[in-house]
Amino acid sequence: MSFTDDMERLQAIIDEFESNDLGMESSLALFEEGVKLIRGCREYLDHAKRRVTILTSDGETDETRDEAPANG
Image (cartoon, rainbow, N blue to C red; front, side, top):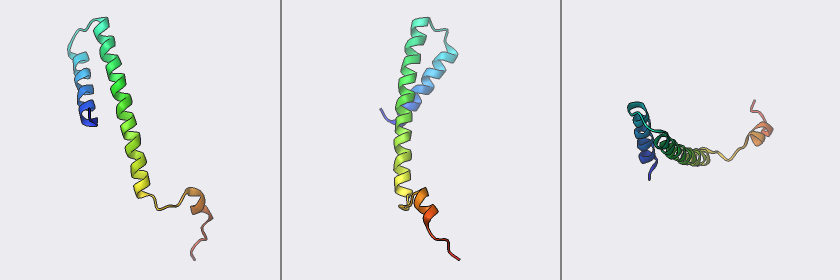
């Protein structure tokens, strides 16, 4: 599934919790599915963040930036 599919499924799970009187087993099954989807989405977002950081990096770290001589 894609990130978008996972988010849509999470919304469907939330809607189901809000609109239905679910039994304990159904609630637990949906909760477990939701937790797995959230973990997958978080991993996807963490990976995307790392990619953006790499793509926008100018090659300097905070340490090298602090050591650079000041202009002026």
